[in-house]
Image 1 (tube, chains in turn green, blue, brown):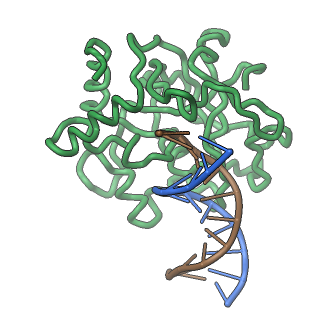
Image 2 (cartoon, rainbow, N blue to C red; image 1 turned 90 degrees about the horizontal axis):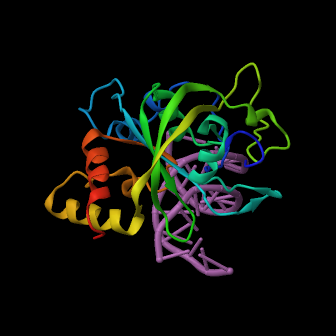
Length: 219
DNA sequence: GCCAACGTTGGC
DNA sequence: GCCAACGTTGGC
């Protein structure tokens, strides 16, 4: 939310399922295999170290509150740092809980004229309680979450830089289709295989490939 | 603004 | 524990 010194996120929906900490590990295999994606398919969840996080850069009101939070809004905060609150999806939350201090994430602009990757940020505080779940006036208030057993977490992120050239979803999708057909780093990119996930992991190959596009001509 | 995809809820 | 109804995400 713009007026406050915080980031405001996408993803609504309040699930049940009390703070299971690792909903992912314990649940069905769909969740488990989904979480794997990268390294070998073993029982322990793989450690990702790069991320993509979605937020809406254009004004849109929900309950009279503007959800707009683009990369410029993050950049404008004190210390160019904000908390990524409002995530209300278990898989997205679980990914945030895996984030480590210092890891990098792409800031992705969603639900806007031209969706795509706008810049890069850094995780500067690992997962802690998302206070907005207890705030009745907040869009992301969750009546089912109790302070003695909070369901939702957030991390703090700090703006690093804009991407040298905006990388639109349409271009990333072309590479994705190309790589899916002939092989390549973006063939399994979560942005396309898990379209609605607002916080998602990237493996090193995906991250590096996307970064390399900065210096390429638009496809 | 439409609507497909998909996560969540709740009846049974 | 299944699954239909419902609500949300987010591209277009």
